Length: 317
Image 1 (cartoon, rainbow, N blue to C red):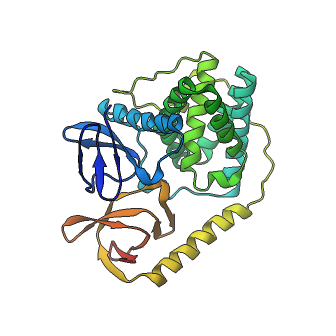
Image 2: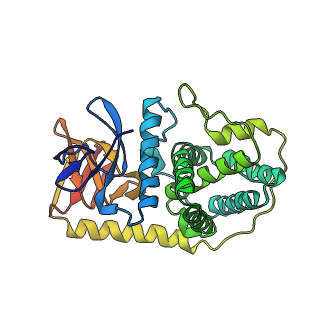
Image 3: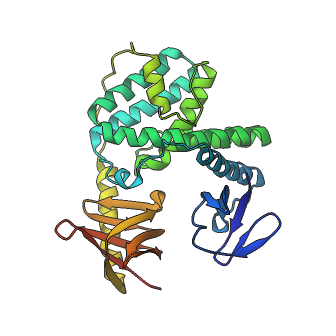
């Protein structure tokens, strides 16, 4: 797929350039001139060309998914309501550790233990786990392709990067918020499935079943879950406290505010929420006075249940 690199002023294609416009936000895939292309913000360029190439291929894969009408993208607005609490993350950490163990041992029994924890967590909080599942499917697939590309360019860089990703799975802070770590988890269980020769339907067109559901359907008789000891909840408390402080600081420093009706776009990697307060660190696209409007930089949107509208606070500078 074609790709474009851009900064705040210019979008660079292979043989031409155009002035920047609001189609080019984030590192992702977009529809441009009737086709899907990969895009990358040069503010986040990688010095290592092999790693940068693999990242561009990751975004190209998103263009491939869109071309094939991928239907398993998560609802990112609902994902902001992910319920972080000690019991959920206690079992999530245990699940990830067993997944790493199954990758290292290549034991089907270890992998079944991973699935038994996933099955238990589905029963406890289906909405949360469905959000994880869809990210693991859509973004995990893209990371899997990214890793395969990097492995061809440099086996050593692939192994170094994979080791860093695996180490992050042991740190509770990596799960706050849950979105980024789900990329790694999805890619890792695809690697394990490959190694164990587990048959997964990797087609995209007309396929609405995430990979974890496919795996659970293949192994209906999985072992009972192990007992998981409680974990220190302080990082969770700190996470929410830091969001609240940042919301209060943003409102205090805001030079503008207005009322709007709906949120039409956001950066899910850089947006957090507490109850009716939403903190956007990168950008927010809102429907205001009959048209969409971009607010770049940090902003806070507060939803009023009575009026069914939002108050937006931001610093215009």
